[in-house]
Image (cartoon, rainbow, N blue to C red; front, side, top):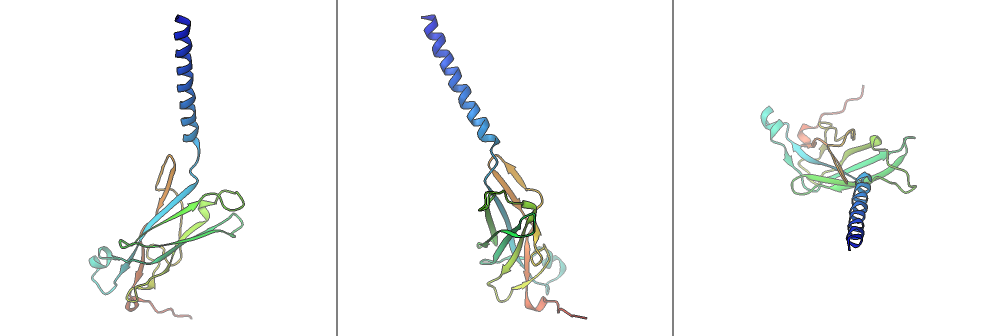
Length: 167
């Protein structure tokens, strides 16, 4: 009887140990996708400084893109998303590209593509929207989630557009 109880206890202990090993192994796996999020806002230069800095409004329907280059500076990934009514976007990128290699995250850049608002459709580099924002360090990294949150990107009104002068 004692041997039977001992065998049952050993089977239970072994199954618990195997279960915890599987959980431990799952924890070690790197996430297969990366999330990149942010906001697109409209800044009006005709306002006072306080309103200009703090009074930016979200733009719905803006197109934001991400382009990732490989180590040889060739395009390895391109994707885009449209902002919601709060001006927010979230790009979800698969870490492995078609040839099975991992994406070179430091080679990724997020930029503005277009604005549907004719009163606020001039690209600015305030926040890096025109030239692009490079991904450096994840904002959060927890178990199976890696997320990069970039600072807001801005469009402005045509009245605020700086003339480009070539000398």
